[in-house]
Amino acid sequence: MADNIIIRVQSPEGMKKIPSTKRETAAAFLKKVAKEFGFNSNGFSVYLNRNKTGELVSQNKTLSLLKIKHGDMLFLFPSESSTSSGEVMDTATPHTSSSLPSVQEDEIDQYLAKQDGKIYRNRDPQLCRHGALGKCVHCVPLEPFDEDYLNHLDPPVKHMSFHAYLRKLTGGADKGKFAALENISCKIKSGCEGHPPWPEGICTKCQPSAITLNRQKYRHVDNIMFENHTIADRFLDFWRKTGSQRMGYLYGRYTEHTDIPLGIRAEVAAIYEPPQNATQNSLELLDDPKAAAVDEIAAKLGMCKVGWIFTDLLSEDTRIGTVRYSRNSDSYYLSAEECITAGYFQNEHSNPCRLSRDGHFGSKFVTVVATGGPDNQVHFEGYQVSNQCMALVRDECLLPCKDAPELGYAQESSPEQYVPDVFYKDKDKFGNDVTFLARPLPVEYLIIDITTTFPKDPQYTFSSSQRFPIENRDILGETQDFHSLATYLSQCTSTSFLNIVSDFHLLLFLVTNEVMPLRDSIGLLLEAVKTSNEDLAQTWKKSEQWATIEQLCSTVGGQPSSSLDYGAMGGPSVPASSSAMWSCLHCTFMNQPGTEHCEMCSLPRS
Image 1: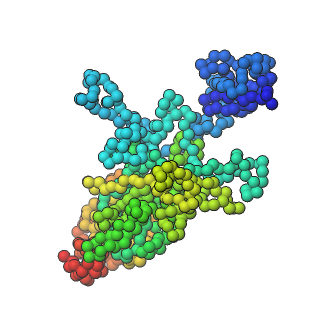
Image 2: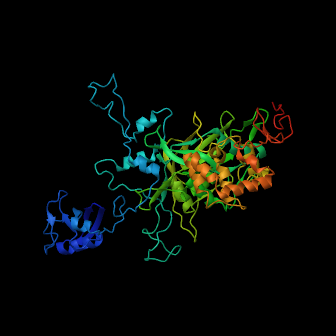
Image 3: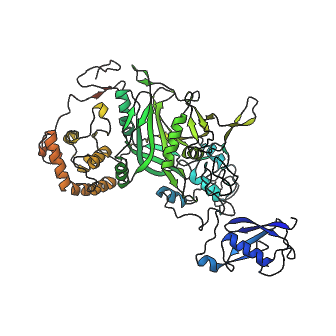
């Protein structure tokens, strides 16, 4: 046994430990190295020193005669002929061209990867003692992950951006050659043949590691911005009219967030409300047969699904229109069930990443909660859950607690599923760090908060001044049909056809209606809305499909076809109907037609 030794071999792909003996010849040892690294016998060279001196050649001398001892480090370098011929090393170390898949990253990720990212500072007149062209420690550019800089921003930034985190990983002398972005797995590794499958057997090779929850230092999205208040107000109208909660998907795009180094902003341009059953205290999502069509339309409009939003609102005082402040440090910000739902959505919309062997890492999918704030007004709070939470949800290891919404519960192992131990650290009553088993688990270890904002100058991807009914609101009597389309078109006073059709919900109806779906022929109109091209919109307006739509509206809505030319033909326009629902100026409650006093606050209409 004393002859057995282990030699470490360092290569550009990583390090491997090669078992050997003192009496083994150099030729036999090199064959082991070739087999371990996946090379042929002539595709590499091994040296005793890092600077490529002391080459180990294939000969019959033993390792002991070559003065190679137990634990020594040798250095392997592939020959140019082997690398140019396309031979690939069989290794699992990430962040090399041979082991990483080819991934098409999002446009914003490609853009930020090319940016400098450094934080440039001006010359300090009090501390800098050099000329205008010089630099010192007081004015030299900072790295985007500098924690002291982020902590002194107003307001302070608790989480660095994801691309700043990547710069931190890939910085240094080795330029991140051995940096790894590993997705956590809570499942038993398959293919272990040394024992019966679980629950009869398990070993250290196939057993997943225990997880200690840490607060994530970075976030994939640094800001959420609604383009204008109208988007949020129309979404909140459902709660104002019914008192029931509501859920919707956020559609928009990812852009650069300049307030944080290498930051990403999710800009929301529209909210799609899927089929759902809602009460004052619960939400149940139903199967959506139109989901694929909605995603397809959004993609053609240059948008994607960036997150989801739901309400948690309860009236505090109906006379002044206040709501209850229920989500705070004394209760919870996100419940365990909401964290699990957010983790499910984030796993469905994973973030493409070239530095991960799986081709994806984390997610840019955000969660927005419309709830009461400290001033008892409606506030929008943004969140994500950590990558550890995503792994626990993906592998079905996390459960909610029935009687404590702020607590989750790490599932216990069963004959059907092995669940690794999950821990978290907290301070005891003496101020000492103590590790606890996550049964139960405070969900604040899983949450990352994101600032949610509205711009000072509203932006409008969809510029229509009229409001086409929102989908799946039949309970309110707001239906999407050709009668509502005829009413919508007759109320449009704009002479610009592009402005009239520039409504996300209208475009969804044109594509998904059952009478005359335009899924295969609306591409030109979507391109016109995307690029704000009036000429393209006018070209599509002359198509047979739009002529048929006009005829259907004329028949169903009882409007003459000339009135559908939106002022161009001088046709009659329908005045604002006195039978329409109206919003109270004092509490924003939506009242039934024909009333002069608000049903909620009893104040007059005007």
